[in-house]
Image (cartoon, rainbow, N blue to C red):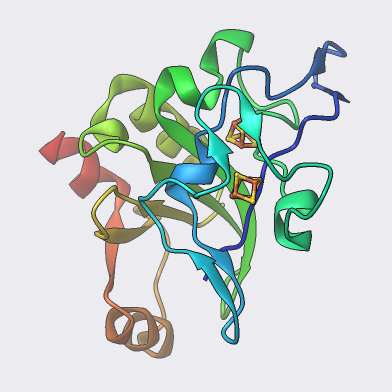
Length: 177
Ligand code: SF4
Ligand code: SF4
């Protein structure tokens, strides 16, 4: 389970322009929050504490640690100012994954969010750099995308397919969009 939250503090982007969540609350919809013992919310549903487009109602008084710690990749400087997640409907973040290490994850806020030109450009950008990229579509479909040159070990393929994550290659993905 990916755990997230909202980040209102301003941090610096790669272009040294401070970024804050502003009117974005998309990760409070796209991501599950909680632990195996205590679940606050599942993916693709608004958190009961979210004032959509405004912020977290329990920001000061009791948001989970996972929410406190979460910073999406846009907040950390990925992409342009205009790419804020509530405008693209795509939340980007880094996550440590078994067999893969640091993996770039993109979550779609709508059913077609990961098929847009923006989402495909981000997919291509990271995959071409040799970074594994997990695409989590709204509704639950998940794809782990690799560059065409990568040889995926059978152990990895079996582990991810058992978890309902389809292994896809970039050329396959771009041919179907
Ligand atoms: S998706 Fe990013 S910018 Fe939007 S609320 Fe979450 S951390 Fe903030
Ligand atoms: S507790 Fe607050 S920051 Fe965490 S998901 Fe809910 S609304 Fe977002």
